[in-house]
Length: 308
Length: 308
Image (tube, rainbow over all chains, first blue to last red; front, top):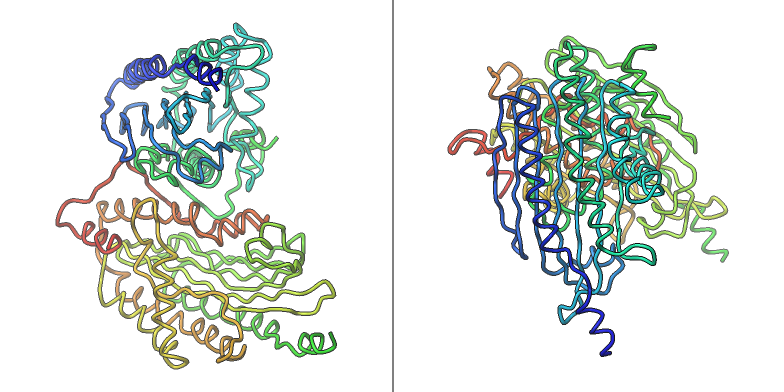
């Protein structure tokens, strides 16, 4: 018993460091997005959670480049609801969680939508002693028109970070990403992938610091993985046809987030702040019955990539 | 054992009659909708289900009155998936189901969206003997601007039908409707209600014929419950502001259908035809971060009714 308590008290914690990381990252991402947009600025809403903690929701809208986007952080703690304990398969109901979550929906259909998330979780026993912690996150790209070089740039930026830590990580993370962001009812991935990882915790080979360094390094690479693509495509000509297609595809984004995304469903079911969770939904969306792109078109090419 | 088999073989069945009912109703509703629209006609897609059966999807779009709508029938049978057996708490996995399902999304924000469904279900044992059957359905109204007389017309039409059968039915059905079409994550009903009922099966007081007559009478009343409202409002002036509000509210409709609607989720999870299921989604939708109507506006009045 003494030994176990000793272990508990000795457990590494990355709480303070990760909070600092997400707040700094929120600032630097917002700055880079505003600079790329050149017109709109983020508006911040601070909110408090009834059960403990709160967040900073930062929204940009009606920009020159970004039609709508959110770069949010939250730091929450308290008691886990029954269904979350079941989901995590834990007998412990006291938790701490913090993270950054972002979605950016550009105006120009040639600029891809991006999503990223970096998070840290701690669990405590009845006496408040920490018993477990882990990191999770990822970043994935959802283009409306396919450019191999954009996809490659986005993947390679993340792969290079992963490879600095362990060459085995990226292949696992990118496979999980394709599996996770999958609209099973359509037989389509949401986008062209990226990375997805969860439950990164100390194991025989790696300690907590290893995972902390990895996830924060990936977070710090976000701007470099995405903004150059925006810069390359933001002045691409487009017309009504391309906008129409973008809005149809945004419908699939909504379908994924509301039907399949565990983060969204879990957030809503645990009484998270609805407006902060659903800021991920695109600004304008279209559902046509049985929309099919013209055979041989660029739209069909995109679809074929998502279906393979 | 002999007695039980005897009961099985004697079980009433409404299969043929209900199939006839939904197909006739599909014709008459489509005719009334086309007449009210005055421009567009329904387009029919017939489809087959791998496990057995199929359907007739009828879609209207880009009309003068209706921006998008579907009036669908399906007649399906075969083996229930595991999760559906669990949901119905039945050991039997052989089923027959048929129904009509419709959603109409008008262009004019002063014309409410409407949804209706009339369905019949049978279950069989291992030897194919029928062991259970029931009816379900309902019809509910989703206005963007509130008119007491429209809400009342829609409810009264259905209440009068119910009351002809049993004065206790409508109060129960309309309460279930408000409980069912509820966006819990918003604290709002989807619309201003109507009726919702399920598992209507022979009991001590009523036989199958009673429920068959009730549900088919409600179905046959649909046109009268809704089309007069369309006629009254379809020429109402509106501008960009009203269209904006309609598109915001359509977002809530999408949220309900993808997050909460059992029919949609079940259909998608049991490999139903995605395009026929998701024809219920509105044509164009908008999500703004934290949209709030002006204090004292007609938009706020509508919202307050949905929140009470």
